[in-house]
Structures are given as structure tokens and as C-alpha cells.
Amino acid sequence: MEAILMRAIRSLGVQVLGQSNQHSSSATGSSSESSEFPVYIEEKALSTLAYLCDGDARTGLNGLQLAVQARVATGKTTSLNITKGGSVDGILITEEHVKEGLQRSHILYDRAGEEHYNCISALHKSMRGSDENASLYWLARMLEGGEDPLYVARRLVRFASEDIGLADPLALTQAVAAYQGCHFIGMPECEVILAQCVVYFARAPKSIAVYRAYSNVKECLRTHTGPLPPVPLHLRNAPTRLMKNLGYGKGYKYNPMYQEPVEQDYLPEELKGTDFFK
Image (tube, rainbow, N blue to C red; front, side, top):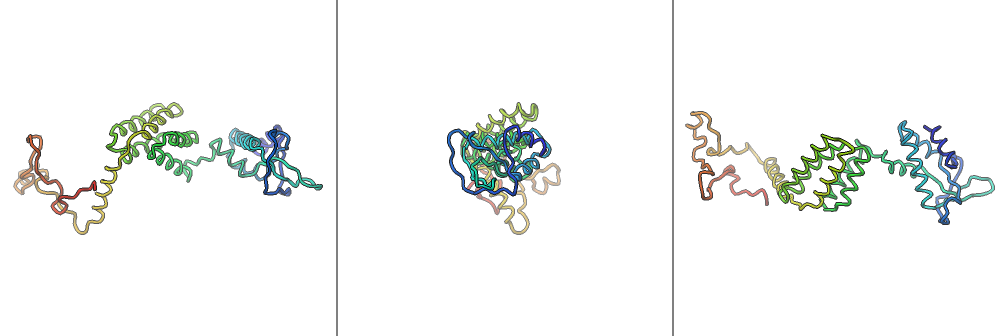
């Protein structure tokens, strides 16, 4: 990998700056023509690039190209002590610049690491905040970085109920359809399906009423002391005569048989009147 990168560096006219050479931390502005200054790359940066591209020469060359282009575009020069007579101004490419170049070529997106969770979190929060542009950006960051589209689609299914809920019940239909579409055709064709779903969610009204109410129910169950209350007799199933004789189902009012609202309790006695939506 280093040999391949060295050939590319020579063809670009970039010089390798060894560890014995020193450079100052201050940067100065340059004229509009950046080509007037020589371009240098740290030896450590070259080694890091060869290591991070994991044997993929195309990835390494793309990362190198993007790093060089970005530094030349800024036009900032650094004072380099590469001669005995004194210093010379040049454009320096460091290890950090190489990593930025690789990130621009999407190789540093780690599907199993922190960046994976950071990006899905950013996508989730952008949709929740109704920012359709940010939502598309974070979606593209993930997909272009090699993320599994079905993982994104599963998260969208969750988002449809957690953050949109009954404010737009069709959101769940959109999410499930997007998942099925991704499953049918895969990448790269399915990217526009996810993009459509993400924009729909960003624009949709939001409601966490169901999500919050269900969380309250779980909290009620976790904090309950002693045995859980039994199911009221009138709500119990009575498939046998013995169960009917024990009072199972007795007094239950079958709602469709009544034209007027039915007065009937459905929660256990000790939870009567509880409103989990408050």
C-alpha cells in the first residue's frame, strides 16, 4: 500500500516530510495561486493512510487525492525547517488531514462503532426536529458509508410509532413499505425509498402520546408491590362450564349490542380510574 501511495505522491509532485524534519505550528495565508508553494506530506500521515485503507488501493488513492485537494484549496502554508539554511513555506498534509480525506471518501464510517450510533442518533433527532435537509444529510452519510439499508429502515419503523404516532397513523405504513422496498431491491436503488420516507417523517406532525402512555404502563408494572391484580371476572374467557360456574365472563356487556355507550370497567379494581396518558 505504501508503495502504491508513494507512486501516486511522486506523480502529484508531493514531497514526503520525514520525522526528522520540523515544522512550526503557525499557518500563514497564501496568494490565490496555491501552486506557487510546494506540497509536503508527513511520513506518519502516509503510513496512517496505508494502514487505514485496509489493503484497498482505490480507497487509499481517493483519500490521498481528497486530502491534497482540500489542503491546496485552503491555500494555507506552514513554515517548514527542511533545509540547513532555514525554513521554507509550503502546504503541509498531516495525519489529521489524511483522516479527513478518508472520512470524505466514507471509509472511516464504522458500522459497528461509535460513528454508527452517532449518525443514527443525528438522523433520529433531525427528523424529530422536522429538519428535512439535515435528515437527508445524515441518511446519506450512513448509506454512502456502507450502512445496511435494512438497519435504517427498521429504525424508521420504530420512529413512526415513537415520534409520530397517532398524529399521522399513515407514517407506520410508510415505514413498513420502505422496509419492504429495501428488502426487495437493495442498494443503491432503495436509497431514494429511504430518502422519501425520511423526508415524509421530517415533515409529518409529531406525537409521543402513545409512546409516553406505554412507558407509564411499564413503570406501573415495575413499581407494583406484591402480586399483580387479577383479571376482573367479567373480562375473563369462559370456554368451559366450570369456568362459567365460577363466574368467568359473568356480567360482561358486549359493546356492539348496545346503541348507547356502555358503562363498564376494564382495569383491575385497584387501578380503576387510572389514566396512563396523563
